[in-house]
Amino acid sequence: SGRIAVPCCGSGVTILAANNLGMHAVGWDTSKNYKSSYTVRVMSGKIREFKV
Image (tube, rainbow, N blue to C red; front, side, top):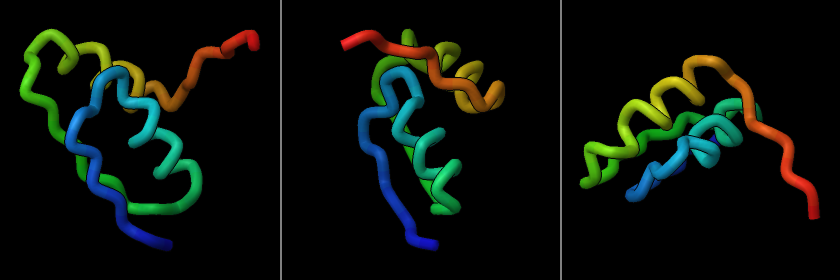
């Protein structure tokens, strides 16, 4: 179990991934526009699927 600092939360995927790996994550973002996005995503515990 490690620790990770996320200086640009964006959509919150990094925080969620860290949590899923049993790591403690602390994140912040200077943009208020992203706050609701990453809060909802992290609280729901879901990462949407991406096609490559």
